[in-house]
Length: 457
Image (cartoon, rainbow, N blue to C red; front, side):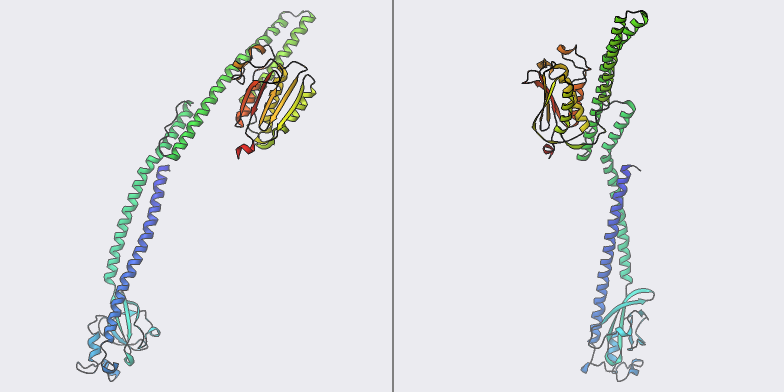
């Protein structure tokens, strides 16, 4: 079922419930009002009947027998004249027995024990007249018994039937109108979603991420389209980076592979190579294999996003940096010290952050002269590694974190050119940034900064 049809059916269901509830309330209110008017008419009729009493409050009947044989000019004439013009009226005893009908017979739900006393108000109840609904009023006429006057509700039932038909017709028109309006309105609402669906299918088929979708169609749909376009832009950038990584990696791998191939050809073509030359070629092969292994490992780290599967945890940067500084100091080639300016807790991936710090320290130790000091400065969410090496030229400070970028003066040093690229990737994954500048210690100051937990509040 399409989203458009679901929206239309939902609107139809809501409008149908509203129509049914309103129609039922309208019908109930109209029925109550109509019956109330009939009851008022019956009560007025009962009061006019009581007004037919003669002097002393009696109707002039000497005995109950005169009910069956009233004299036109006799004592009971006033009572009969008062009720005989009603088409549905009768005189009953206290136990409900009918003494005389003055019109068509009818049945009533008023029980004898509900009959009113002479001083009480008339009692109203339901009646059945010729199979149709009716209302009846019971009034006391003293010792003679009770008079019941009924009135059918045929006209009211017809009016209520007409009202039901009108409610049904108006409700049907309302439901159809709401359904049609919802159908066309839902069409314009889901149109942007259709565009997003078409764009997703086009991307899946062609792999083309460079065609954003139109964000028109409301705030929510606009945000959805903007998010979709951001996703396309991120995918496009990721693909370009992967393509560039593959191209750069193929270029960087070509050199050690070519050197290894040359050394292997030398060994194969000269089996009786002098021992000194043979050892030099083997050592060169071993060094090339080591650099190639390191390059492949760093390429894998970059391609798989360092630490992306590692859970985020609250950790102090000093707790991550201190073990790395201690291990580097034990190597003995440099004096590596921790310069703790301020402690702070960051929300991050400890293993990834440790890899970034380790790359910074190893990078500084590689370019700093042996025996010099490498200072690791921790200031809140910032880690800066200072060395006393040749430093980074001003022109290279903006691009030193690019993949495979090598400063001209250090191209002869071993390394893949990916260490600082991994540092930037880790920093950006933690919403941070990287920095490269001149160090007051005489060399380079390279590091990263990530937001602390206090910064995120």
